[in-house]
Amino acid sequence: MPSNGKPPLNTPPREQVEDDEPDAWDKRISDTGCATENTRLNDCFFEKKDWRLCKKEMKAFKECWRSKGNRDRTDSRDN
Image 1 (cartoon, rainbow, N blue to C red):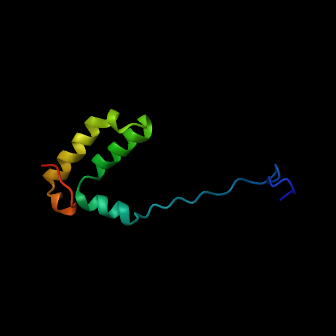
Image 2 (cartoon, rainbow, N blue to C red):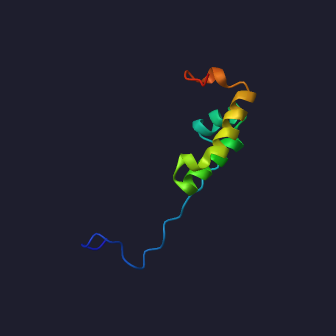
Image 3 (cartoon, rainbow, N blue to C red):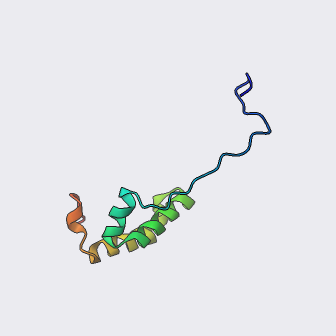
């Protein structure tokens, strides 16, 4: 690397390795039965950067969570 700290212009781009193996978080979400709803909620937030604009997705996730019997997975609950 040159003394200016920047890579030379002729440096080939680094190869990106995709990891298709689910990690522990992905496995836990998958086990809830609500992975699709979780993905939609996360995608909405990523796109809009404001949870308040993702109320429809949040409602769908909450309904899925309840319907799949996941209430015992968390310490805090809606009454």
